[in-house]
Image (cartoon, rainbow, N blue to C red; front, side, top):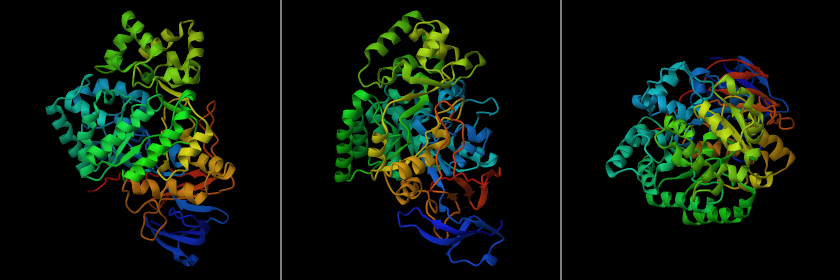
Length: 530
């Protein structure tokens, strides 16, 4: 590999320290020297005059799990400065995957991570999934969280019931096996199937294993709406009882009727700090979320997996019960229709051509297009697409984003679903923080923002020798113009690369070179060691 000299740049090194002017020499995969460097030491020179040189950004909530195996360059992430992603989110992902559940699990996963007939789907364990990823290669570096739902499925299938003692023992063994394979932590998504069927005690037991390995629980909690306080208290109990570190996924409060809870949420975070409970969280800088449309259906209807859900969507009696539960609510269940409304939920992706006209439309518009009752229209869509429908929903305000973003616990993420007409965060989360929240709103300094994009997540997930510009560290580097960097994607036209980010370097190789793509798979699969 050639020696690369980045000259005349302003370095923000990720540590929160004040920026400074210096040159940076890359030798192979690593940063060899920072300071005043003679041009004769390098084979290539990149002039960064007037630009910021920072560590590569780390996306702690990514959904490239399937995409990385079929389109491994992951250009939407690289273009916004992301050089490392954390996969395996929300308790449902690619591994472990017992062979008998492949068909049902693919359907359950499709609304989040997509589906592909190009893959063999025969890896079974995290170790083999990561081996396959290493063979096919990747643009950014990739880490993987072992998902609670996959662990549960291997131990006891997709049944809607608490685990037995014997099944809990199996879950602990599976969790240990996957941690030993190098998983960066444990994830769960308590609104997703089958995670939603678990009791607090189940999570405590498997989290004890994660705690043994000093790896976090990354959690989409049971509620980000009406019962968020109770939900956070459950998570804090898990931390107390198991000793695990907590990392909340995409931290926010949903629904206008719940905005008054922000002061209580902040008080809970402060209480954890006083008590010595280790809490961190990530967030994306938008006031709309994105997930699979199937979350609007009550949890009982998902029991047994996606095939059973599709059956129930075709049963008139079950449909009436679903309507009743959505209209009246279920205690402890986040009712997306209640806090976002049919007109605040938009379809982003479908599986079949027959329903492609629904992409970009809200649920009310789809009902009008189909000439159906609003409930029947969405139930029919989910049935026809076998639950493989993505969506985004509106829930908050920029000032709420700032309240949580400026706290010590926070770092930045995308939570980007890559299929169809996606949420604009897939293309713009990190540059949006720089352009909107730093430059325009002045919510924090650029040094603080870069810290939250680099060193902070590296510390949280124990990613060694990355997240800082430091001699001997891997050369994951972003070069950008602080005066012009901004996201360009909108909810109407999300598929747009950001402005202002000229160079992306991963492990010493230039993948975005003066705004032009160099499709080299320079990323590494990072396994965390005990």
